[in-house]
Image (tube, rainbow, N blue to C red):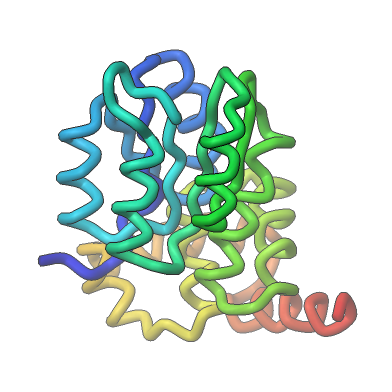
Length: 203
């Protein structure tokens, strides 16, 4: 069974909702979209995820059941539940899970807290997470570039990252070169030092 995190799991039977949500979160990590509960259950049990966005209504199935399954699998996984109908029972159930509850239609403003929570968990610092997200947006970093930067900030060894992501050293170097070119830093050490200094001033 794989233990590396695979990015964001998006579960929605409405293709438009799935597309819109995926387009927002994929800037910060790979987005894997599924449209039905059985496929989602398989994905939850088979892989670990950075975060999960699930539509509360999946035809005859409940998205909340999937959210609970994801939390059983990984108690700290950030979960966002989206819905088109305000239902007190659903809101309370989401609150008990500690999930973010979002009403349709949802955009970047509504999904930002979820993405921030996911990044904070990945880098392990409540100050670093928002700064990383701002840099990713400001410099239009690709999902892989953001993921590499987050892994460096989290102290993950390059060899471990390459193994977890099944990435070749040459591909890693290509992403790093692009990341440094976009941010105008000479190396990853200088970039991460800058981010950590920014985090220290925001405490």
